[in-house]
Image 1 (tube, one colour):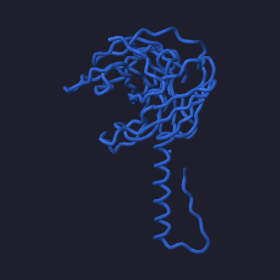
Image 2 (cartoon, one colour; image 1 turned 45 degrees about the horizontal axis):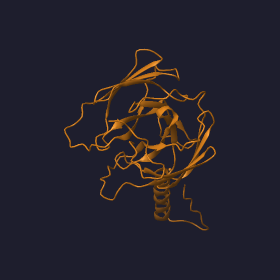
Image 3 (tube, helix red, strand yellow; image 1 turned 30 degrees about the horizontal axis):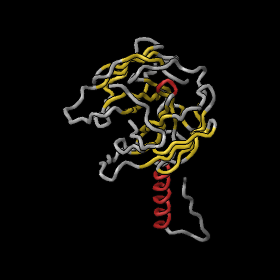
Image 4 (cartoon, helix red, strand yellow; image 1 turned 180 degrees about the vertical axis):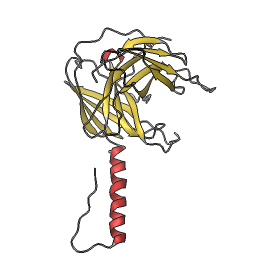
Length: 250
């Protein structure tokens, strides 16, 4: 099924933290101190769940994965996207109210197609509004990637913001194309050399899959033995095959 680029202004399925400091005069009781600590922790977690944590180049520079922290099953979606020079502003929306959200908390990624005119050989500033806020800068690519074929999987190193301490070192994002309701799950990531990676997807569970063709973004971590930036990445399993060169730098 040929892939058409998602419309810039439409909602797109992604596949895919402010610290409250309370101070006062006088002596606080132990109970008040405990309450203040709890409120500060809750505020930090809430802020982490709505901040841009990192980004990665994907799809031969036609898109990026925007990384945030939160439930792995309730990934914010990229809605209205605009560009002014090298600044890309994305209005993120929460999933529908009927989407079940797991209680886990970790890095997840949303796919953002880049408007035409953005130069991949220059740094890009990404500004999030709505469900994800903040600003981060994605470093320029050394050269524009060769055009990728239709529905070709791709991958890129995650460049994190200074505050994103929860995103593991060696993280990379990948995008595959297929049913938006049946994204592939990583079974293993292996390497036979410092410049190669193989991502093997687990066998898909029996489920009813929609017949749409959408980007499914995922995150995983490269083995410590992989030290190169321009790694060759192979994808296998779950009806996904292909080989690509990792975009970006570690």
